[in-house]
Image 1: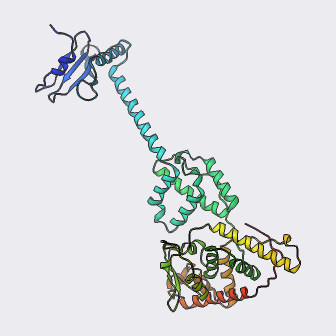
Image 2: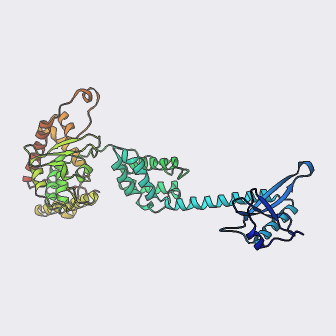
Image 3: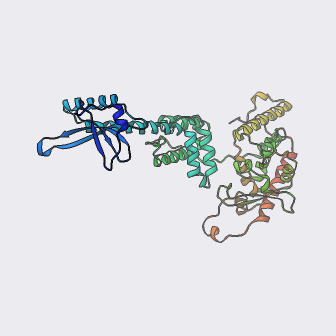
Length: 427
């Protein structure tokens, strides 16, 4: 006589050459399958369909042995649930598959959510730089702009950034620096497009944002303004004093001077030179910058940053400019007092550090330097036929030009009295 299953009977069921089943009397459909390997599994068996179309269906309820095994009571409850489903017209096998799919979807969603919690803007930017931006000539500039302007998003999930967020940050930057806002829009848009290709976001928050129209600057400092800048430089603190002075003397770009390294300098040869590596140059080409004697003196007497290859300690160029403005205004007001003019009426005309480069380029032709040499000093890329055939280094011409420029500045500095009475202060 067949008897109901017991936990002991399941435990001692011996494997055979072929799989076999142990039915549980009193619990229709419930049985234990015993495999040749010795594994045991609870299943529920039923017939689906009618007569000749009927087919036997097996629903796996769970293991009957080993880790995570169901108890006999649990298996009987599961089989009872399956019978009730059948009684209500449902298919236990379909229900089981639906449950498995729902569980798999739940697990996948949880895993995706866990991954996305790690997909902060800061983390994803690091991946973007390694995968794309660091391979660009402008990679360093891309890093600088995105790291600075998207700092407020650093801990936010990248898929949490909305178009309204992009508009706010662009408007904030535009109020401070319109051209920087234009760069941010271009770099940010490309970054989020990359995120779309990696299936990290579905929409680009920078799409549809307004483009800032770039108006070329034409600000050139007058001789009186240059004289005031030189007087202000003498009162600046290290390393701002040396940085602003070298920026003016070399006529090179802000970041190129700021990131200068000692290994790039030859200060003791017959022709002292700063060789800007192509990796740091805007056009990707190495650039030899002849150093005037005053530039060599500045660099030779500078305090060095301990354990750093950099000439200048890290500092904010914006803060340096603010400090220059403060000192210029201070000097201009001192001059006003000396002339008996109301110092509170004295202000300074707005200018930027990059305007020093334009001022040098504009002044050199006045000193007899031809425009082609000026372009070489600025490391501008030649165009057209000249770009193909012109291979002259212009080393002597550039040295002569920068020496003339340094002498011109020295003569301005020697004329301490300024004709400046009223300027307009700007950012």
